Length: 234
Image 1 (cartoon, helix red, strand yellow):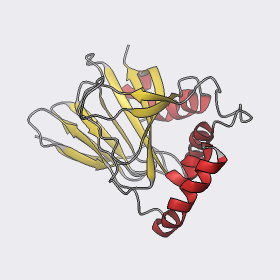
Image 2 (image 1 turned 45 degrees about the horizontal axis):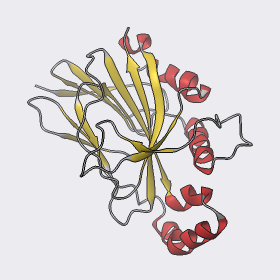
Image 3 (image 1 turned 120 degrees about the horizontal axis):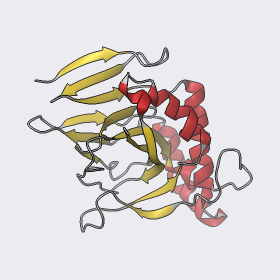
Image 4 (image 1 turned 30 degrees about the horizontal axis):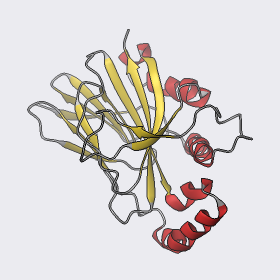
């Protein structure tokens, strides 16, 4: 039988939930980073999307945005996402990872296999999958939602102007309400658990557990950025 226990991670994060299901822990965080740290994260992600080569402090310019990211390979009902590597960015590799290691006693021994950001927009449907066969592997996902008007700033001037004319006013009217899409995870002999992927929310779970990142609704003007850590206990 599963139960929920409230636990504290950092002073700024007062709404951490810990689900213990068949001796496997699922951690859910409402506000994983402080406001200042989250603002820095957004700046780095935004700079990657703009591909501003002048900002070498925040972006490894060799980490290009590529299309075709999938944990399950090609599938007729699955639309791959955009992604870029963050493994060598010190803000993610060192600073945020140190926070992940303080979640509980056993997480202090975690090691990084890779870090990347997956970008999912409306109708980029995900599919159920698991990340690894190794029971000692873990996945940490941190969510960042950007409006696509902002994310489209890397387009050429003509396309960008057209995009803003189409969506700019709507984006302003919606504000932060357009935050659709959910994280689904399924433990054996348990109902599917559904967690809203709000900005600055996060989940930590064993990589052998089946899960799915739901797409945003068809008229969404948001871009879901998932900063994914693939981790292992040596």
